[in-house]
Image (cartoon, rainbow over the protein chains, first blue to last red):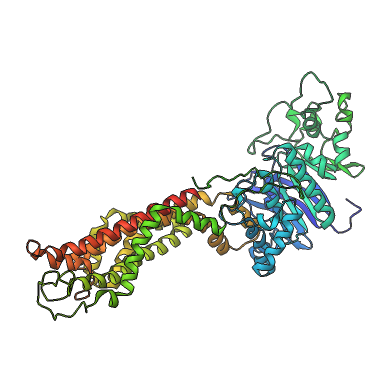
Length: 335
Length: 299
C-alpha cells in the first residue's frame, strides 16, 4: 500500500461501541483503499465486518456509535461529517451492493426507475435522460434486452438478474467506491462467478475502488488484490491476497484456510477451529484468538494490545508468533 | 388466474444471449386488461358511473326543480311526475336525482379526508416511532373506545348540522383505522432492506417515505377505504334521516326517507325510492371494493 500516494479511502483506528457501554464491537480497525483497487474484508459472522461497512457511511444500527477513529474519503472526514454531507456522498460517490437482492429492491417500482432515481436526486438529471442512462447501464451489467426489462418490476427477475440490478443502482451515479456486503452469498455458485466477473470488469473499466465484505475466502481470492482478516472486531492480518492465502501469518487466518474444503487434497477430515468466537462482553485478555489458537503460549495473553505490525512483503499481522504460523502442518503450504 | 406469477427464471445468461423475457405484468396495457376482466369491478363501476352521470347532469335527468313546491302534494306516479310528489308538492324523482350530488360527494369526502389524514399519520408514526408513535396510538385508542356512530352523532350534534361538520366528524373518528393499518405495514416495511438501501443511497427522508415506503403500504389502506365508503354512505344517509346531517331543504336521501315515513302505508314510494337508491349505491361500492381487493392481492 505504500506505492499508492493518496488513498481514496483511509480508515484509521476506527472503533464502534454499544451506546453508553464499554463494549467495543469494532476495535482499532485501520485500512486504506486506492482508486481502482479491490480490498477484501473477511471474517466470520459477528466479527464486525458489516458494522465497519455501515460505520463508513454513517448508518450504524440503533444502539451503536463510532467512539473513536477517522474515516477519510477523498479528502473528506466522514466520522464528524454532518448528515447532509454524508447524504451527498452516499449513492453519489459511494455506492453499495447488498447481500440479498430479493429484499434490496423496492417491489413496487420498476427497476429502470430505481436505477435512474439516483441520477435524478443526486445529479439533477431529468427522468428521461436518467432513464436512458439506466437502460445503458443495465446492458453493461449483463441484462439482455435492457430497454424492455427496464420497465419490469423486481419480482419479474431471477436472483442473479436482481443482483445485477442492485449493482446497476450502486453504479448509477458513477461512484469512485462501491461497498459490497456479501453480494454473492445469496446466489448459487455459477451466478456468483458471473457477478464477480462483472464487478471485476467494472473495476477495471471505471477505475472503481471496491471494498468487499464476505466470509467466503474463494470470493476474495477471485476478486481482491489485498485482503484484511477480521476476528472479534479487530483486523488480525492483512496483505496481498495470494500471499496471505498461501502462507498465513496469523493463527486465525491459518485456521480459516484449513477449514475450507479442498477438492484436490484428500485430508481424512476437514479441520475446524476449536471453540467459539468470544462474546462481545467477555473478550479474552491479550490476543483475542489465543484461547482457540494452537500456537498460544504465555506471550499471547499479556494485558496489552496486540496491534498489527509489519511482517515483510507489504504484509501485517497481529500475531506475536507470526513466523511460526502454518509450520505445524506442511500439507497446507500450497493451499 | 391472470398472470400473477411470472416467469422469473428469465435466464441468467450473459448479455447478447436470446434471454427469455418474462411477460411484463406491470405494463399499462396488461393492467388495464386485468381491470376490465374483473367482473365485480366492472359491474360496480358501471353502477357508480351511471349514478355519477345522473348526478352531474341532474338538471337534464330530473326534469323538475327539486325545491319547487308547485304541484299537487302526494300525487301518484305519472308521466309528468315519474315517482309522484311529496307532501309539499315537490317532484320525488327530481329530489332523488339531485340527492346523488350531495350524498355521493359528501360520502367520498368523508372517506378521502380520514384516508389522507390517517395514512399520513400512520406513515410518520410507523417510520419515526418512539414518542410520537406512542402518543398517536393512545389518542387513537381513545377514539376507538367510543362506538363510531355515537361519536359521529355527538360531534355533529355539537358542531351543528351541515356538510362541514359531517366531514369533520368523520375525519376525527375515521383516521385511526387508516393509521393502524398503515402504521403496522410501515413497521414491517421499515426493516426491509430496500428501505435501508434507499438510506445508503443517500435519498432524503421525505423521498424515502413518499416514493419507497408509501407505495408499499398504501394498498391495504385503499382496500379498507373501499369498504369504508359503503358504511360511510349509509351513515351519512342515517344522519340525514335523524335530521342531523345535511340541512333541509337540500334534497338528500336520508331526509327524504325520514319525510316519507308518515306516509308509508298510503304512499310507500316516498320512503322506498331513496332507500332503494341507497342500497344500489352501497351495492355498487361494495362490488368495486371487492374487485379492487382482488386486483391488489394479485399484485
